[in-house]
Figure 1 (cartoon, rainbow, N blue to C red):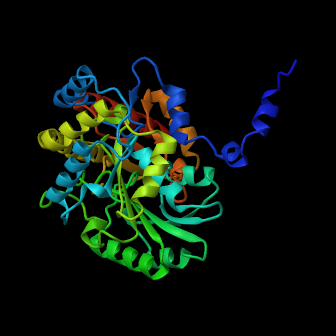
Figure 2 (figure 1 turned 180 degrees about the horizontal axis):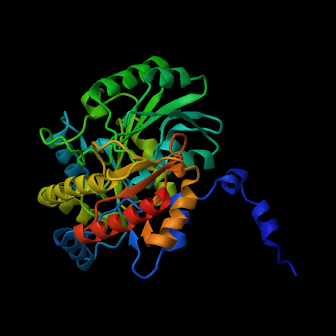
Length: 398
């Protein structure tokens, strides 16, 4: 018999994989998934299904027999559509050669990290931050160096001097998520210029997660400030993005990486050895999203704005609850006075109120004591979830 114990099997895997803790979001989902009547506000997706015109394009591709291996970088039609989309909203012109189709935004992140990092290298990460950035860093032996953001007078701010001081000899990149998941903060143009200048001075890269760039609430503009506004195309900036949020395609697992053209062959090799490309029929759907999806995105943004304000009204009723009204993305990140174990609170809310939230502690330093809700839900479900949560908060406060 050669059967090994679970302990023996676990001992044989890499220490960095063994030691990486489970995401608190996953812990919450596993605790509550499938419960009758539970309203899930824990993950970053809305309630609307993918638009029919996107699905139709994918189905037509399948029926046409586009089920074979394809370009590693992505089909020419999608890369051209990505360039045209960026020409509409960001300073261009953009070449299709800058765009690489990936298996979701998460693979775009993995490619960026694989491209830049060796074991022991460091990445500056303002925190609280989406855990799907620092987690993969640790699992490949790199070190996320957190720069805690400040929450004072119900306002989040980034200490740029503290970020600059965190740059050391092993620093390879600064990672910035703006608009922010989870806090809804949006970097200003001045913030971006300051980060650009410190990256240039140190000779390091910027990894820019601008997934929520179109989900911002300043009605005078069409998007949030971007590193594309202040950086040259051929400098050390990698942009990770996804079709998931704008066009309700979370389950499709398709995204893109935007990069200078020079590292293109290296990026193509990473894609080849990781996945050998993204299915053509998925890419046809993505082309339709870019070319026909403006009205749908506008609908989602209007729904998100109304839902943000509704959630703020309900949460704002309670003493001991504090938050900044989000300027972007679609999350409320709110603090409960006296809360020191956000995961335990989330599990309790699932059990007592049948509402799924995310624990703030899983988002890194500065996140403990907070809870995150995704408010991009249909109004009736959101209202019911907020009333349940409101009752739970009131019972906690006695």
